[in-house]
Amino acid sequence: VKPVDEMEQHVVMCSIVVWIVLLEMATRVLSTFAARKLCHAGCGLGIMYLDSAQLTARCFVWVVAAGSIAMTWDLSPLPPFRFSRPRDVGITVYLILVSVWFALRLPATVLAPLFFADPAGAVVGKALSWYLGSRWNPAWCGSKTVGGSVAVFSFTWLSITYDCSPLQR
Image 1 (cartoon, one colour):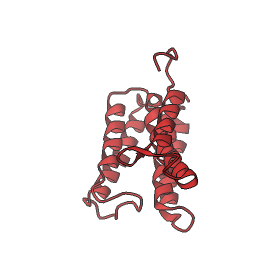
Image 2 (cartoon, rainbow, N blue to C red; image 1 turned 45 degrees about the vertical axis):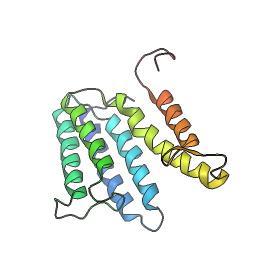
Image 3 (cartoon, rainbow, N blue to C red; image 1 turned 135 degrees about the vertical axis):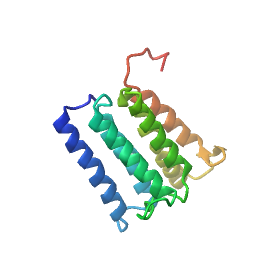
Image 4 (cartoon, rainbow, N blue to C red; image 1 turned 90 degrees about the vertical axis):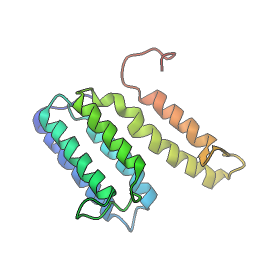
């Protein structure tokens, strides 16, 4: 994934906003869990197409992050997202990390493991527990399951976008 030109970035930015609104409104077809993970991965995918060297992209990320954090911590007249928890530290850390990354003008593609490995681990871990039961997908660290952790490792390894050897991964 390479950052797109400035006009295409505006399309990506609009797509991210539409994606968030759709996930917020799709209460009949998406569980809160699914909406949260799709927001995590979908917004991450869009962010990977933004160029952190462009002021417009940086401002977009900062405005979305600040607004989302304000909603999550009840500092906004808008209600929190349906898929966030009150004062959600996970969402807050995710948004601050991406905001700092853009402030430092680092390539967003390096964040691919953050965008995809975490939601993959949660989805795979939950699915394996549901289909196979806890006997075949045991929790090993709190609620973290072996299957979910293998998914996190696999998606991290596969989504590293910079040049490195398999051993460095």
